[in-house]
Length: 157
Image 1 (tube, rainbow, N blue to C red):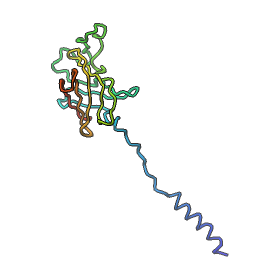
Image 2: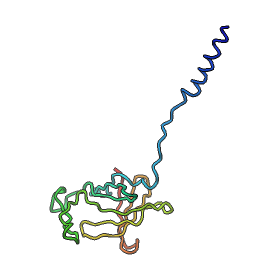
Image 3: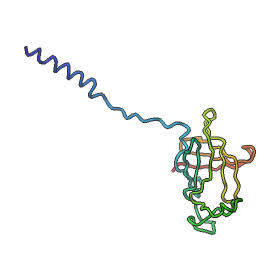
Image 4: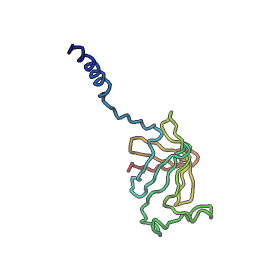
């Protein structure tokens, strides 16, 4: 009789142990390779910090900080005075969107079809972004051909 009462409890205990105490794994959704550039980046010269974000499927960047040494104004006061459009010359450099239109190309593992704006000259260039390492970013602005350009190097902050 005692054996008959123990069997159901034993069966429930085995099921409970088998299913109720299963180890919980923290499943982390992997970041798509395209989103690897999101976040804050500092230039290797430590004079410019940008914030890269994604909007409507395109990657963009704004100026988050810059070293005001060499400028005739304070960081919070500098405006886009070199912009060819007079209506845009009063906008602040801090927070200015300087990179736009980037799309991820999975076959090349790089971001293409972007434009980069140089507030020092008021010029806009075509742009591509490469990420040779997890925390290193190469942003290339160029005119017509990639080899006619300049590369800025950034590290993740």
